Amino acid sequence: VCEATIEEVYKEMKLLREDLVDEEELLLVRNYLIGTILGDLDGPFHIMGRWKNLLLNNLTDDYFYRSIETIKTISAEELRELAKKYLLQAIELTPSWSIPYSNLSKLSTNSPLESIKYGKIATRLNETNVFAWNSLGTAYLRNNNFEDAEGCFVRAIKLEPKYSEAYYNLACIRSIQNEIPAAIKLLENACRLGFNEPDYIYQDADFNNLRKSLEFEQLMSKYFPNHLNKK
Image 1: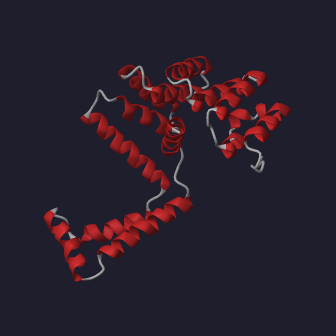
Image 2: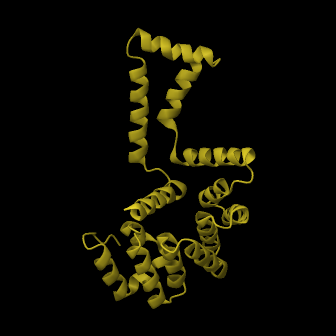
Image 3: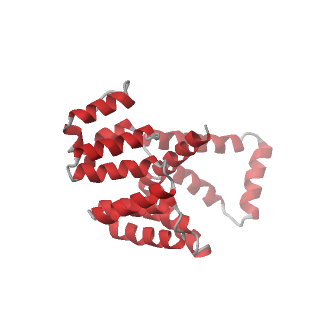
């Protein structure tokens, strides 16, 4: 149970680092935050408490209205940039902490070279940071440097033998290189260890070669029998 829980935490951390918030989830959070504000304004005592906080923090009433406008209009891309901003602040405060660097490596999806730079710093600061090795490997993979990418993923697996994402990424490399049997074996290892994102597998461009094989369909039927093929 403990290992399965940790694996789920890893997956959620991966999603937070790599994927933009979809519109449905963003709308849900917007509605929740607006509802929280409305609750804070329910009755004179709540209203006084709200304005007291503004006064104690030297804020004007404009701050209140700007906050509501931000909640209504902020985009997924802006949230990603905010994450980068605060990770950089974390680095300024604790420059020897590897985790902000590994997260920045993952967030810098549009700049492989910048992603590699942050990943290298993270692994130098903490050679046992599994996420850092995987982030650096992903950056190398996006830059088509398969040799260094493979080295990073192998290092991550040595540190955490049940780290399914590293096996998945190795499968990506083998598929790109059209080494189908090796790719199938690695992808099966990833699924067996808890990689549970069939939609992502079907849509991942790295698996274009792999998806042409009968073995791929057999593997997906084995681990995701109730999943609709969305190719």
